[in-house]
Length: 109
Length: 117
Image (cartoon, rainbow over all chains, first blue to last red; front, side, top):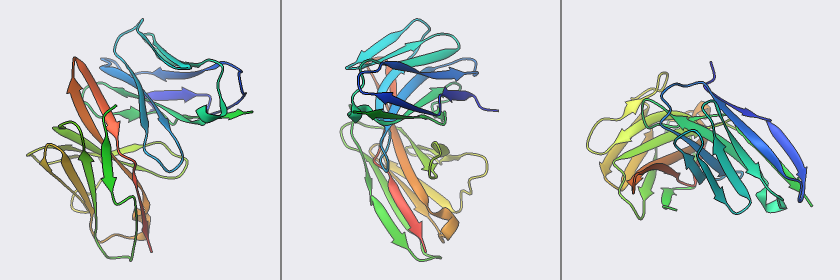
């Protein structure tokens, strides 16, 4: 049973069209929720860590929020260079990351 | 962000040979590193947790005698794929855990593409 579920699997946006990616989790005792960006053939690039419900973090056009059941990655006025796969992961009892399957984002000019 | 390197970035080998992949944290010390495997269009799957100075902890279904892990220092972990076969072809990625200023974060290397002929 999946502990981390990301939706949608794929998302196509026009440049400037804001949207949100979802990450829902079912683990108890969450230690941290992580967002990464991964470009094809490369390792994941760290974006954010969220530790408690109500927490929010921002970086350029990205904003991550966390509730007790899910996290959202909001993308404001995206640009083509934001195209990538966005991965959500959680840690609970240990320190290893449990990844969702990712959302593949394509931003067209 | 912290920097983690991997070497080599790409390797092609014949079936039956062994391949060693290095993972280094360049600007911080990491008592814990992790090794993941990623198949095309799939997410990262944890293989093992590598702790400096002690034996690695392997995930269920991962053969410890096939995937040898050594974490000899606070900045270096190695993964050796022994007697590699075509089904071992994959993208191997390491991460290093950094504890600093109340934050517990993991930073990933750029990955190693292994192709076994």
